[in-house]
Length: 260
Image (cartoon, rainbow, N blue to C red; front, side, top):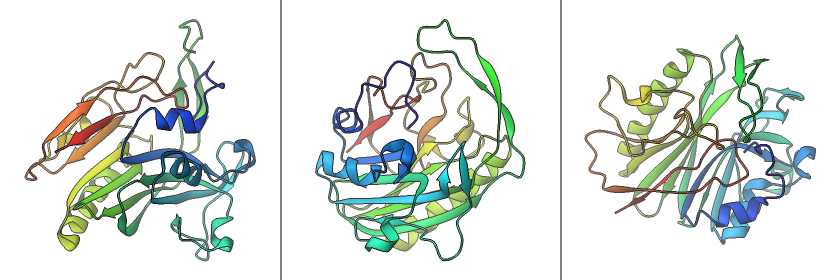
């Protein structure tokens, strides 16, 4: 949830409340990191909207772009509203799901990271005057986080690698996992997240469908779609895309649907 230029006055709680959703899938979430005032952002969001359940899936320990490391085996795969104090207090960064709908089960899938980073093109600011520039970025470990809801749906949130081909391999793994979870829990499934794949590649040459077609990056003038909501092609899904303004807390535009 990187803050775009000129939007530092927007608070996290007000931005989330403006979306008025039942389930939120969030990427780039801080958890007790100094740069975010040592707050548990997932918990703060849940409290702001009166959500009953939240979970945070740490991808790295520490602060990306500054000092971070991979998790070790003794550190939690998922931190939830039911975690004890010791587990809750880890300083980490990752993805999260916040739900007003009660969650029956939480699941985690490790996706690894590309051994190589890439020079990424960083766009100019929201005034249109900033010059694009390239920055070399090291890839971080990636994961998928799933919430099995009481209403008969499983929501899977992920943030895939920005490294081409490697992210396609990760998405294939998430899709396979999604179908397994849907079968084992008797639920319908939706994959939500920043897939770092443009031009509708997440559904190309596959039976999956995209519920939203919208350019989502950057938030101050969407040029490309990186964010998707995907469902299996053989799953009956009646969904109406929702329209949201920029939240002011992210360099991506939010997407959402109302599912009948």
